[in-house]
Length: 397
Image (cartoon, rainbow, N blue to C red; front, side):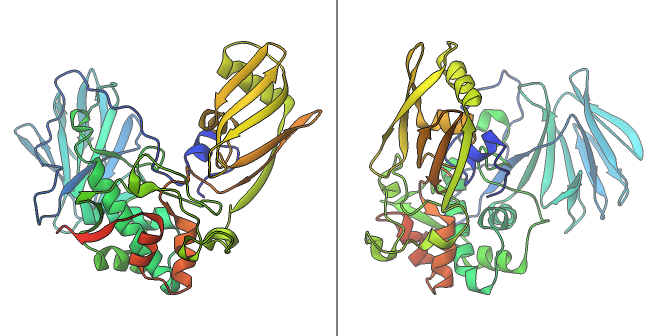
């Protein structure tokens, strides 16, 4: 969906939202969350998103920047760069003002209605910069949930037009639900979300926003997917290959991606990219992966795949010259850079041939199917009920 086939890690997580890095508590001190991330009834919450940034960050704003560093308040002129880095464990900011240093958190905010630029991207809200638990410079964007979704929806659902607006609305509700279900789970890190679909949802600031994506967010403001009164962790992915995968929650039940969930009907996503795919892996690469994942150098002779009821590979059983090697399907997919675990494999003399369906983990909303449903005239509520079982769409604020 958003990465070349050679990028194994990217491919294995494309479509987003199912895999998360374990949350660890950093040693004290750490930046305190002074703004609650759990929403009060009837109020829009704020979110804290850690941006992918290097060790040295360049900030600027067309309306000028205000920097708050402890008790000090500094001003940077419009469009003048401010360089922020770590030195001796301190956050150091240099610009057209006296150099600022702090062992705590540096806040950067633009003038009224202004945007803060970080490298080549612009963001709404304000920034917090501090030394993270792993010793890197953390750059965290603090903004309202709805403003955050303005940058998420177009990145996740892809190009939007008048015919696919309802799919974008469904994406907005799913992304809002996912976000709210995740808030509060990483408080000790000083942020609640990452800006990448490898860990959470793709967020690139304002550069990808369009009139249609803004319409989708505004039209569904505050709406979430609920199951028995609780907000759903609404996973979604690029293409299910004709049937979604079972998830860990009852509302993530596997369903055929067809009208009325009827088997034998043409899948909504069947004419979209990545519904089906094929690739080959040389025997040397297959041997190397089997050796690395099993911990013993071996040569693969044959394979047997164990699948679940949706046809996704649960386990890859390899017969090698060192005995049998059993690998989880998800680990094999990651190591080989496959688009999904819905595949079949046959080993030839010099390579392994694979034929598969779909892209992503397969759980929850199929984005390709959502787009096709919108093109056929479905509403965003109909789309959401297609992929999330026994749910209701409620307005939280």
